[in-house]
Image 1: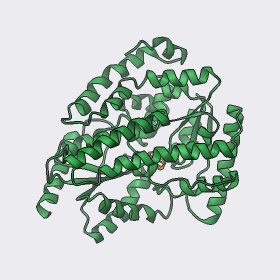
Image 2: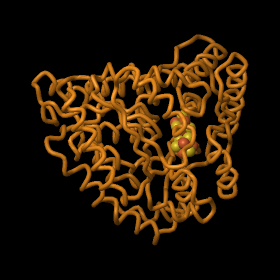
Image 3: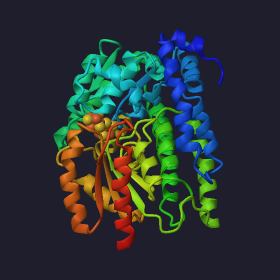
Image 4: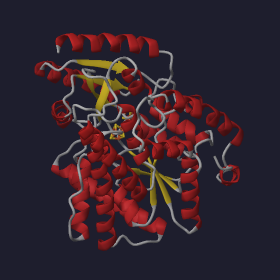
Length: 425
Ligand code: BJ8
């Protein structure tokens, strides 16, 4: 890796602590990813992106900012990328997925709060995440209580704008959400000094839709009986989609899809025949949270789809392309409000999605993943389980944080779950 120390210094990072973080990642990644057999050639690009996770892309962000460009950091898939891109700015997803940041998060947050929030706050206050350091502004949202209050803490360290996301989907909620989008559009225009014109917004909608389409194409290959890619690799690609340059990401992922489609034609699978096919549903898995997928795929299962924000929810629905700015803003509002997050009530659309995806991806069972202290997803499990029981779909709930202490216990539970699926097949 090139020497980026000057760059990190310019971002006011804690270099000593950052060295500790960088020291663990290669081995961790090697054990989980590079140990896989028969990986598609096209995964080399994503290996490169991970090896340069705090280098190459950070350099690009720095060059963009040197030319006067702005970087917006976000934590939720309700924040509309289209408006950021239309103003010539760059958006990066900032959710923290590493245990490394938890102790720093716990310095300012209660211990009994979701690890995603603790890690995100810890990443900022420890000065060890160059993405946080490169963001000119953070964009929060009012999705869950933990996040809502965490923005007040993060606001002491960096500028932050909070979008007031409604938690119901009635007509008046949509009107409110369009209003929030307009406030955000004004902010983006003010910060960048660039007007979001009809033309620019159309181009941005096209680009982000294209990114969604390529992810859909990737996921379509996982519907095949012949699984050309592991769930772990697919998860990594989606995680990278949150911060990579969209055009390059589309190009590289299209190349990979060609390879995967060819593998399907040739019958090249990365799993043995009759491996139980698993749909994962639940809370997001921010990079480098690969824990559950790794356990599933080393315990006799194969992940075929994620009904999560680091999966289907991020890209399944497109923004309708419209003519005027007003129509386009409304289409953006519709698309984002169609995401089914457990912070909404009621949220029956998610249950319909899970059952539909289970069938589309020919899954054999569902693993419901919950980060500890995420109440909305934990409570929603009850309703999801009831619906899946009615359909005769096997489901297991795994609640786990980023630490590795419970790996053995989860493995034992999952092995038993997969055995049960196999015998009932
Ligand atoms: S759209 S899932 S990204 S809010 S931080 S809610 S895990 S307690 S991340 Fe989310 Fe947007 Fe919904 Fe998706 Fe729970 Fe933790 Fe809150 Fe979380």
